[in-house]
Image (cartoon, rainbow, N blue to C red; front, side):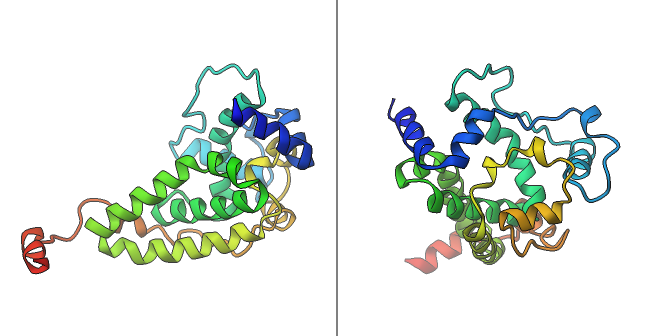
Length: 219
């Protein structure tokens, strides 16, 4: 398949990509592996997320046997998505998701050839398009913060050393998150809780809009 060919070509061009695929270090951790961490470390942050958030970091491809580089890519990106939220400061709220989408699009397109970058970004492209359409039509209060979040995310993604899914997170569990950010060019993370309010303006209940009057006004 063409995607396999592209992966092989990029492995030859990008040593970090080749090392990441070759290492196959899966970033899925048990609570036992994460407990007893020093404050401020990645281990501690992941532990807090796993124990207190209610999110499941293994939400796709459960039971999948990793046999190829492509298998590893698909599975590992499932695991690393939530870790990316933790280390970028783009939390798991509406604006945080938008900012992380924008950061990944910038980071991936500036690192990989466009054809492979487009494949890696196919889900993000869909999510970005449908979110903006939905907000533009039904959640006007959400549009402004989405634009701001895209700008902030894109600015950070341009500074990344490489896409963050290439980090072998098992090797960095006992690093301070601040040091990980410095190592990989993760700049200007929002303050914790800064965007917590954005879920309320992007989901029901939303302000009542008289769509019939809006349609009449447009005629």
